Image 1 (cartoon, one colour):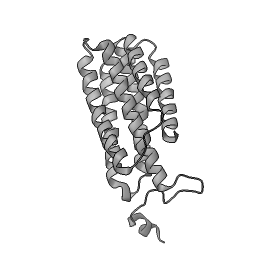
Image 2: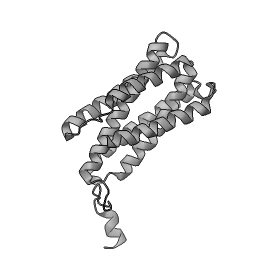
Image 3: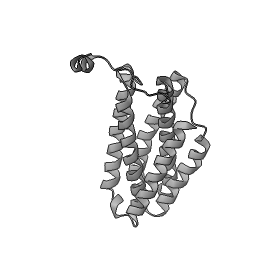
Image 4: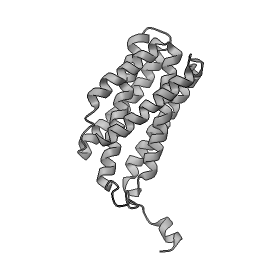
Length: 192
């Protein structure tokens, strides 16, 4: 087949998979499972931050971010049911861990809470972009959803930066730790 014919042919999710790679259906299930877990964890992070900073000047910003994450979570709740994908078995862990991360970052101050947001959203923005690239034309709607949510996460990261995230004490160390934890949570939630 010529390169021009390949370029105009509709792509199919998983058509380039190698032996041992997840099947198309397993790939989609992993994506939905991990994204649901991530949005649930993000919502819990903001719940923890609001428990500490709920009456401070950053509260309206945090509430706005939490509402956007709830809208994402609602979408993935629907996709779990529609696609018959089981949620991660780690949901109870993310329930506690997300809240604890949010509360702990908020206890360090509003800027540290924003630093947590910046670190998480940077990883998630990249994660959504990577997932969208793996989807073929047969999953155009899911790809659009991931691209839209990735753009939302980029805006959340920018919001955190605009609210002093980089001025948080120990910003670099906090960002590295949160990014590593987020990447680990992604890896685990895809599989468990």
